[in-house]
Amino acid sequence: MIMWYANLANPIQSFLAGLLTFAITALGSGIVVFFKKVNKNILAMMLSLSAGIMLAASFFSLINPALSGAENLGLNPWLAVSIGFLFGGIFLIVSDKLVSKHIEGESSSKRLILLVSSIVLHNIPEGLAIGVAFGSIKYGLDGVTLASALMLAIGIGIQNFPEGAAISLPLRGAGYSRTKSFLIGALSGLVEPISSLIGAILVLNVRNLLPYLLAFAGGAMIFVVIREIIPESQNNAKKNLMTFLALIGFVIMMILDVALS
Image (tube, rainbow, N blue to C red; front, side, top):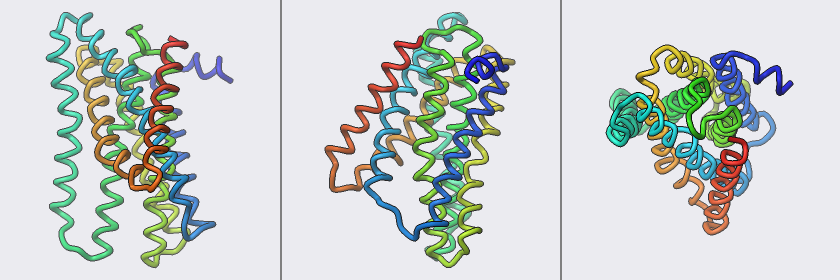
């Protein structure tokens, strides 16, 4: 099975990894079928672990290879990576502003639309990050391996589980049926396999964009971790435990990246 996957074209590997993260989103959304509430400590622990994994993956699998890629292309490494990195954050800020601008008011339905839209928008750069990581394998950059790309996808998938629940449970509480709540929550992750395929194709066909795309994905990932995942995981009485789990997630990703590269 592993050899079969390793022999696939990079875009197909990326798309399948994106489907995995989509499936985990659907799994999280499926909680609404069985429960009205979930243990917030468990969700916070998953978010903390994924925060560490995503931070490590952002550096080892995206930013560090972006620096190497820029140098190989004869670009100024710090300038190219800085531009891509900052645009990753700017993309999400502008996207959030546009969504908020078109969904004004304080009604519960508008807040739910804003919640769903925000998560969908954040899933786009996460999918691109997966695609860029898999597409970059072809170029043999330092730190870019099939294992590190898979770990990046797994880290994103872990934090997608509570994201799916974060959509379906409020929808159920607002009066939507279990089926409709589940479907909306699950479909919020559908953009990830699509954007992962796009990211891989872009990297493979426009090599000069490689450092910028890697840095863009890294910037967007770190933006999501700092703004969304860490604050949500720290909204818990056991703050030290949540912080330590983030450290464990970082170490796990670092060890796998170094050991398997």
